[in-house]
Image (cartoon, rainbow, N blue to C red; front, side, top):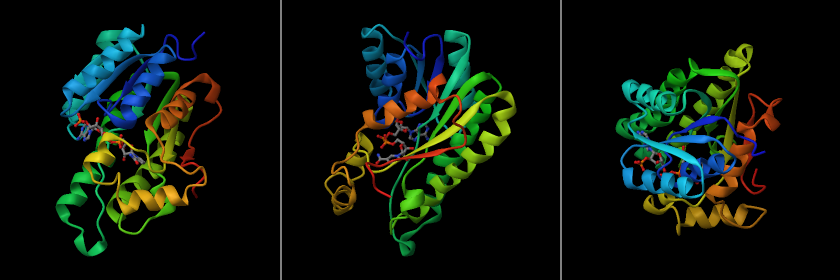
Length: 248
Ligand SMILES: NC(=O)c1ccc[n+]([C@@H]2O[C@H](COP(=O)([O-])OP(=O)(O)OC[C@H]3O[C@@H](n4cnc5c(N)ncnc54)[C@H](OP(=O)(O)O)[C@@H]3O)[C@@H](O)[C@H]2O)c1
């Protein structure tokens, strides 16, 4: 039997990149998946169509993770479509890098609102529906331990995600809900292309330092999410899983 048969998942930011990969992997393991997007409706619908063509179940909903009403709508979509919620993947996120002298209030608030407030609002909306055996997976980043120069705001947001993961693992443990983080190294995605990271010196340095000798791809992260979502990870909570090809 597929390891997520009968489960329902909500994946934020599933229109592209890591989120799209995770949505496809969870669906391939039998979960019905609700995919959210902020602006890329066509992208989310294309990912859902791929899932459905492969025999899976998928529904798409648009909205902004920084708006509480939208996060309630994400969760309600799962309940209306499939009657329950077992897996939450907090993947929506933004990144931009600058040295300390170029840090701005606007960029601080944009990244913290999406990566931290958004994650909290979605989790708050989902928590009331999550039952025993549910799994919350936060997409953090390897930057929280690698601390690369020039990433101070982004690394701070993901440091907050690591802390939140520990706190919520403790808070939700009495309800037998697990909360873990995946901390990817560099993963080539639409976001790294549009953000000018793919092809940059930053990318070359990351790949050169990576023992397994290549960039990561969304599938590398998606398979870990499918494991953490499953009962095979029933004894794993509050962990930060560095997935960076051996880079420490
Ligand atoms: N790529 C990497 O090297 C890497 C490494 C470590 C961690 N991460 C983390 O992995 C996650 C995904 O990264 P990615 O590279 O796959 O990014 P991406 O290709 O840029 O995709 C980002 C996704 O987040 C959604 N999103 C952005 N702002 C949103 C908002 N305000 N409300 C709702 N959704 C929003 C986007 O929606 P629309 O497209 O619809 O606008 C999109 O679906 C992020 O949390 C990122 O920090 C990435």
